[in-house]
Length: 90
Image (cartoon, rainbow, N blue to C red; front, side):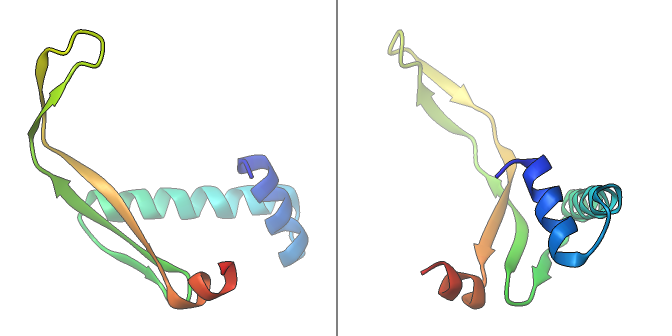
C-alpha cells in the first residue's frame, strides 16, 4: 500500500474527504517526525511504539572491492508492534 492508497482507505473508513484524510496523515507524519527528532518515544496503544536508538560506528566491507570501510554512527527509528496488532496480523 502506498501513500495514495492509504489516504483513500483512511477517507473511506473515517467518512472523510480525501483532502481531509491527506491533511490528517501529513499532520501525523510531521508530528511523529518532530517528536522523534527530539528523542521522544511515541506509543499508540494497541498499535505499537516508535523510538529512536543510536547505531554505533562500525567497520564494513565494500562488496565490489572487498576493501574495509568505516560506517559512521547514526540514529535509527525503531518500531515495535503492539500485542493487538501482532494478534490481528497472525
